[in-house]
Amino acid sequence: TTTAARVTLATADTGALPKWVARINRHGVPWASLILLYVVGAIFFFPFPSWQKMVGYIASMTVLSYIIGPIALIQLRRAMPDLERPFRLWAAPVIAPLTFVVASWIVFWAGLNTLNFIFGTLFALLIFYALTGIWRKGRWSAMGWQYMWWIIPYFLGLWGISWLSPAILGGTGVLGFFSGMAAVAILSLLIFYVAIHQAVADGTMRAYMHHFSKRDSSAP
Image (cartoon, rainbow, N blue to C red; front, side, top):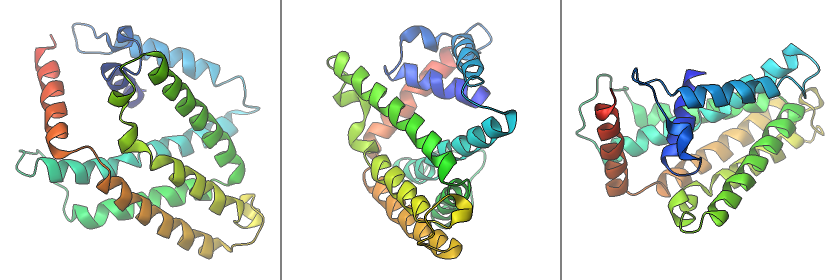
């Protein structure tokens, strides 16, 4: 809940959501985001026949949402190598791509039926995001499409491998369990380095960090 509230707050800060979503109280809590997420979370009870299925879908979606972490880590290391950090991950250039692969494996292991729901939901949200950029003239170029296009072939590739996966995972059985994992690993490493190459420019990233550090320091 707290992670999603901060992500929603950041989304509103970039202009992709209404500004009222970014409201915080005197304790620095994004109360508007929390209320919005409570409503969205309640809606999620309707399409699921059981609590277990909802937990399975949400867990897989949560893992998928964390795949941006390794990419952001390497990008921040590159943009601000001398920034003082309370904790510095050892061997990040090795651990980050491996983490991306493992996260992709976890989503792959969830099975094709779970991926159908997750990717259907995410593509609907991406379409909404794109329409928002078109509707709000002048925001299209600022929404960062040039940095995130890689997510489309990543999702499609992961779904395609899952479709070819063994029947136990809901696939057609063309690929075995371990050959499917190998294909996911190759796809993930390829997408990881493409995403790093297409990431926000170093100077732009430093400007982002400066903006949000000023915002946090000015909060009551």
